[in-house]
Image (cartoon, rainbow, N blue to C red; front, side, top):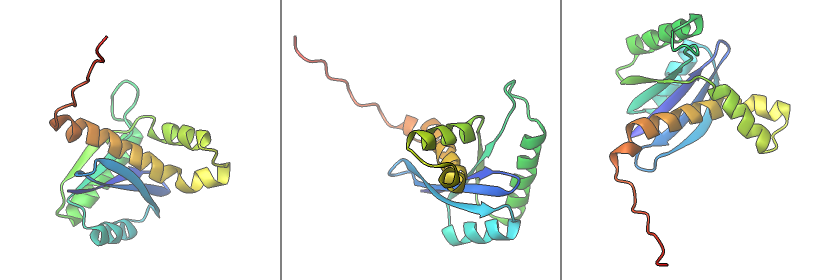
Length: 145
């Protein structure tokens, strides 16, 4: 199954993709926040499912940004016949920036890819919560002492 994740921002939308058979989320693109562009991209990608990150408050409540994301999701649902799931994306952008800093990306380089890396992080979370739990964990072999 092909899953596309979207990290919604007021100006840009980060995109990541994963095949559930592989279980790895990869950053893919950063799109301008224009519904026509996003719809065209999604139709070209032909995902089986879409995951959108929702930025809940620390208390777990939906604030203004979460309401904006929900309006975006509603607009997608009106145009597409693809299941859309949500995942809590608190701190995904900060985590993406931290990982890019650790990898040695400069500020300009980070800004170019941070949104797609954030989308990959939320897609990893979704995969772990939804698909990877279905498979039995490998046995841990203890060495003979």
